[in-house]
Image (cartoon, rainbow, N blue to C red; front, side):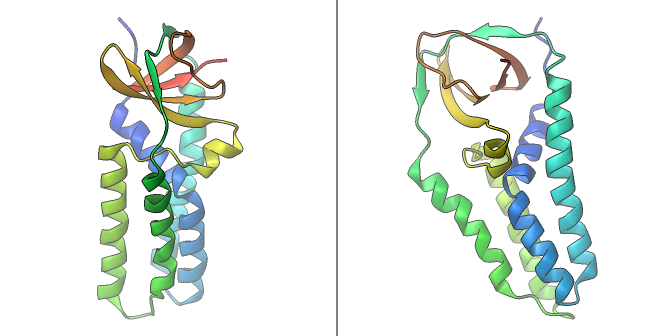
Length: 174
């Protein structure tokens, strides 16, 4: 039996690491406009994203590796880029102290981004993975679409050693 790690947890970490730059921007802008609690929350989420992802990958490398052979490799959709960048409009909302309704709205919007990213696997653009020289793509394995975090570009019919991070989520092991 293949040992896996929790899929939802891995996807939340991918979301937080994907939006790490945005969370840092929100921390700076909200801290300077008199929202120390909101700034502390966004800074905490940013820290969880970067440290949590690193720790998660380190733990994942200890899992038993398996070999997969994708039957197809899918290119990420150009709409993913727009969806990712739309999140960066959040700092432009310019929250002001005492405007709890607007702050609540931004919180709801961030939660919506999180839920959509996790449910729809919108992780193709991730600056922290790119800095660590990883990329993420969709692959077809035995008639199901999976996500692969890789350094060596996958090709149809060519096997790769991976660990399974969760349901339909794999990390390439060099």
